[in-house]
Image 1 (tube, rainbow, N blue to C red):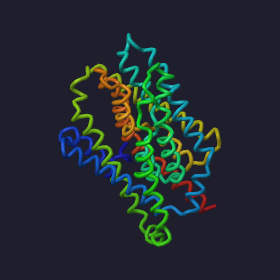
Image 2 (cartoon, one colour; image 1 turned 45 degrees about the horizontal axis):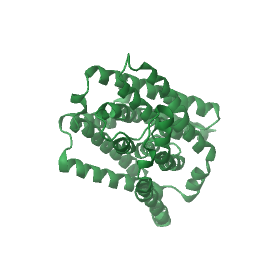
Image 3 (cartoon, rainbow, N blue to C red; image 1 turned 180 degrees about the vertical axis):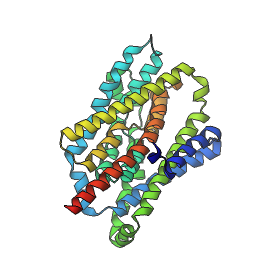
Image 4 (tube, rainbow, N blue to C red; image 1 turned 60 degrees about the vertical axis):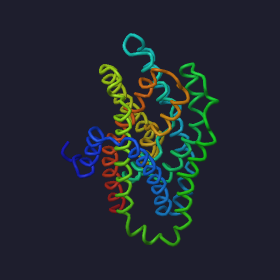
Length: 329
């Protein structure tokens, strides 16, 4: 385990501890939200400027990988969480079981999926396209998928236009702007790849602190029974392990290379807290058990960030070894 305890891992754990004892509240939380939006937009701008036009076109054209990630997110994941509903009401509260079904219906996380894929040295262009597409289609699919899974209505209440606007403004336009200035900054970006990697890590730290702050400030841990929290943590950890295993196994079985596998694992196994909480406020408006319903996505989001950071380091080493072997050959 010692080889995993480096500076970034310690910073990651430090962000969690800081959020637990000094969470962002009130105006500070609002400022953190704005900072997160700006940071994610700048992240996409930097990746747009750093990636060659040919690599972006190659990533966008990799339709087999995109379909595979889409199937992992919206087919495999819901099927995996479906049996959890059978544990209610004897083993888990019905509201918690509904929360897991809701987790399965959500789109992939965008910023952390891209950042972890970039940290690992995987197929970033494909990850950008897949994560963005997952959120565009997911905002429309999630309500209907949840209806299919849990007989829950309310799909027409979502502000799909606002969601599409946010995807375009915060993700696609910054990426396109970065691509537009690529001819003038290509040399600088190529010479300073380490700066992009450090910024990826900084965005992840911001995401970790903001996510943990939100859960602590909302009183989630005080309002729910301890047994429900412990059980949710165990189920979320097991679910993440299963989904990572499925993504890895199917990627290799379908013949994807290691860089593509990296993108598939991070995009396919993650779920979006940023999309999940606002949608929950609409789907379950007025439900007194909202805290229990959103517990799985909040816990899963925090586990996936910690595990993702460690997994990205492992993939980075494997990809470096692979590149070294190819150069020697």
